[in-house]
Length: 409
Ligand SMILES: *Cc1c(COP(=O)(O)O)cnc(C)c1O
Ligand SMILES: [Zn+2]
Image (cartoon, rainbow, N blue to C red; front, side, top):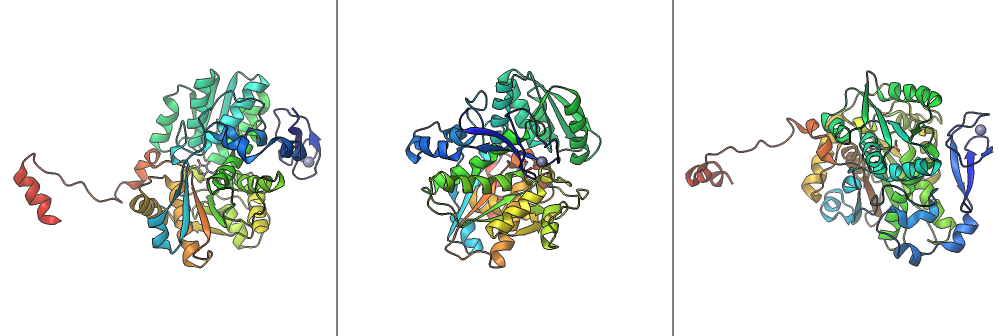
């Protein structure tokens, strides 16, 4: 495989072959996929990408997979100019990258899982697994059904019921662990070291994480091969935001864009903001927290890629901001009412943070700003209970309609 040179430790730089492993044996740093960009530069072009499949696989030259095996429909989601929301926030060129309609399980996780499980099949695994806050479990279960893999998904027991059903329908073994995501993740690391399973976000993590880069690639292509001035993305483990930045830098490296000055902004829920808090306190290390927020999909108290997420905002000139649960619900409603997009709590966090950043002048009004909407509101409906207008109940008569409806508008 010419394009991929191997894995490399992010901390000490030691190199490893392309294998299902994720930590350096010498310093325990995380491993990352390294590419031969000179080789890729020769074979990649805007035209070749534009003629490729209408999925994230149009960027296969920058992904660590030889041939996609599963998840053929993931990615290539809409980038929508958000005129109405832009007016509210005083932004003339605001865009929504809408992964709430990603295929097949309505979150950005379909990107990382299609790459991870294609790789797992390439490695010859027959069993998939993950530690998840909900969306990852949905996606791993769906893609495993498609690939004919045995599947075990591990989740915190207190997840939203829609997210639990969204995994169960594909018939994996759903292991509901009595604890936080961080407890689930620790357990899974122990399980992964004993069993030969493809844990997409543990031993397959270096490959999994690469799928997030496609959120940068697509936005740039959809903007006519221009990097945006600023992006806002939610952070749980910090992988997504780190890889958006890596993706932007790669486009520059292989010559698909001429310049890139994108500022990357991170969004976290106030009830679980270990990365944003480290940033505000000027630390370059993370102090783990115990999550307490309705934004369960991004409630990771001990984020594996937290320090790299901090590096991303430092290098790119971005910033961090947080949103309270109340502000998250307001964010969900604001996006729905202005743009007709129903996002989940993670998207509500992004919109709430976008609003705060706009209000404190982080963007010039003509700048191209992209907000990443990473999940779908139909999966976290229960958080809206008591926060929306009531239905108006009537008898099936014209008189009642006139009295209860027309008389009040
Ligand atoms: C997992 C997830 C994220 C963040 O992912 P990380 O890569 O762990 O930071 C953001 N939004 C949604 C909806 C998610 O499910
Ligand atoms: Zn190392």
